[in-house]
Image (cartoon, rainbow, N blue to C red):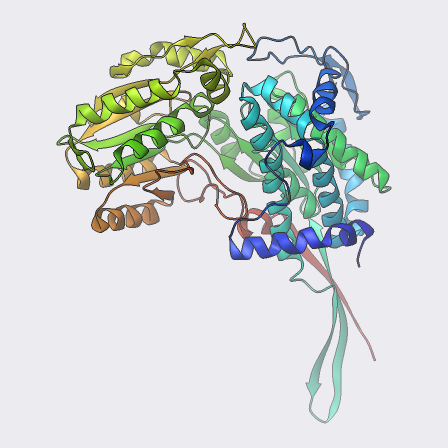
Length: 554
């Protein structure tokens, strides 16, 4: 059974499926905010659309509304005052359940076609969404556009492609005929229907409200499940725009718009009630360990896909391009003020130093030179403001302020005056050194622009320590710099055992904290930082079931 929207977007879907199988570079959503691509008026139109939300009610006509709330505070210091509907969780659940039947009936092709149309509309609204992401998360403009717009859409499409790849393996029907010797064969017609498991709850984070939300949203929706999006209280607008677009597309197709709803809750107990509701069968969560582990321990009726805290680390044993290595690391540690789940926190360096193309460098040299590289990179205020963005939460500001307690300060954090937003909280990274024995300092995620150069006995010890960090505390990214094949082999084996992505000798335009949809698996699902991956077959296959019916035929 096909569908007009499936036919409209089939070429994109076919290319996406080919991309997840080939893992090469591909995207249908251009990442550059160019008027030549998105239209001559797209920049101004997007900004005006964003500004039109400010100080107003964000109406969604959802059931069970009991009031309005406007909890967001912009890290850039501008007034947002967008008021969102507060709806009773039970009303959202009941409406989602009622909507599920019609969603099942349009079949896998219909669901995938609708998802692709939603993604296409989101792409056309990328500038509006980028402003919403920037002003609620503190991301710089370019990151907000790319990660909040096209790259997030890539991840959503990737999930849809995996969902279609799995669902399309199931035939709609077959005739089963079993020979009976001289007697007439046994003959039956069998029908197979893909059925979603139940309501999906997608819990967003405060730093990447679209990039970390779209995989679960579209994986669940494509496989037949209604979705309730519960955004972070300080990053609601990007999710609200997304939900409104999805509801518009659903309504246009004669479907129940309550297949996708927004749950803006004012009490944690409401979120907990939603998460443990018997009708909720999957939960996608990005955030801290405390609530993430609570979900895993208590939402036993649901499959929980969780991305939690970790301690990303890099081993430096040697390098053939010292300056380029330092530049690469300086950008990595500065990008969005380290407020990324993939940013390096612990840099493991042998006590005896490292060999480089510029001669031998002591441990202290490496730490001092990295600090100098960061300082130089951020010496221009405009560059610093664009790369660093603004600090998203008061907790991160507190961690920066107390970072000196955990090691010797190589580079202190500085407050920068943003050229466009005088109230923005902009901070440069703090770089510390410590001994490997000071595990309480660097073996706990200190979210934000806080990194440690850790003195280890030698390269072999660094490799073993890196593996132990991943096994015990989790990580999404690990890196290594070495000119020696045996060190690279040792790190490769260590990361295979621990289950974490490895980047080797990055000294160009690719950075350890970047992840490309259709090619890079974000997370592995083997260490404490994440129990799932964006995206693979396991991320989608357990979100639906196959229900069959059969009967005899002549």
